Each structure stands twice: as C-alpha cells, then as structure tokens.
Image (cartoon, rainbow, N blue to C red; front, side, top):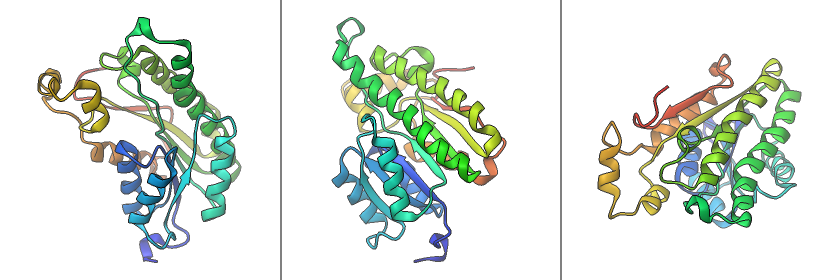
Length: 253
C-alpha cells in the first residue's frame, strides 16, 4: 500500500459510482488519497471499477447497493465499515434519469424517480449523517442538477423536481449537522459530455444543443469531480449548505 493510501487515509463512499460522473468522482477521490467504496446498483460494474483502482482491495472496494430500498443506507454503511473500519465522506451521486414528456409521466415512473433521487439521497444523508455526527467529523456532497434550478429543459419534470428537492434537503441537513462537524453541500452540474447527456439529447442534435450553451461547450465530468473533491476536503469546514454550479452559463444567480 502506498503512503498516500495509508490505513489512516479517509474513506469516501460514492453511490452510483460505477459509471459516468460517479466514476469520475471515485477516480478523483482515489487519486487524492481516499480509500473508496464504489456503491452501485450494478455490483459487478462497481467491483470492476474498484478492481482497476486497486486489485488488492486495500484502497478500493465495490458494493452492490439499491439506494432506493428502505434499508439500503444502513446496509451500505455497515458494508463500508466492515471493509474499511471508518468513513468520513459520502457522495450521493446515484440517480434515475428519465426524459418522459411531463403529461405522460405515470404514477409508477414518478415513484421510481423520486424513490431514488429524493428518498435514496435523504436516507443516505440521514444514516451517514448520524454516524458522522457521532464521530464529530464528516463531509456529505449531494449531486444536484441544473434541472432542479431551472425546471429542466431536456430532462423530465419528475427528474427536475427531484433534483430541486435534493437542493432543499442539502440545506436541511447542513443546518442540522453543522454544529457537529459535518458539512453538507451540493454540486449542480449542467449538461456534461458523457453518455447520459448524449443519449437524452441525441447525437443528431448534440451540435445544435452545445451551441446553445453560453460557453459553447458541454461540461467536463473530471472538473466536476474536482469540485466534489474540494468540498470533501477537511479544509472546506466553512462551506456548508452551499450549491456549486457548473452549467456553462445556462443558469446564472
């Protein structure tokens, strides 16, 4: 084990960490010296990501986690503690993205999206927040979205509403946990250059869509991962309840 990943190195959990932005966050935190738990509904993919980072399993493990399940947060915390003995950072990245037209969203689809994006994030903040507060230190970063700020233009109304809720619950937990050494913040990406955005926009419309972004380009997941890592740093003690935007100028405030 390298010096940067000594046993005392902080432990970070990233939900939805096997692909896309979640994987970029996992890789960034690992490079920065964290031991990482890659949690994902696709456990095989999570273990593959962890195996590429550290085949020995000493600094990276993959965990199967259906964050929408009622007991998922408790089970995830137990698995992380079993693997590493402690945890200091939680990144709530797992999300269900749907682009169904607003008036065609079914009750079941609404429940599915809200169950993952709001319910899963809330319970993880609650369970990990309690554990971190008892330890007297922690960093929680919730992945919000431009859609939750501007009502959504390319994603479904249920997705946009759920991400708006993530912004609110970030403030709620930040206020409650601040005095106990735990910060809770959000990062709100706009369209990123990745498979999810390309699938939603469509390759045939991608050039026109990119041209509509004020800065003229899609976002870089690796940079968003650096934003997450900065909020997860011990030095970020005075930042809580905040939302850091990376949307190319599509939403200004």
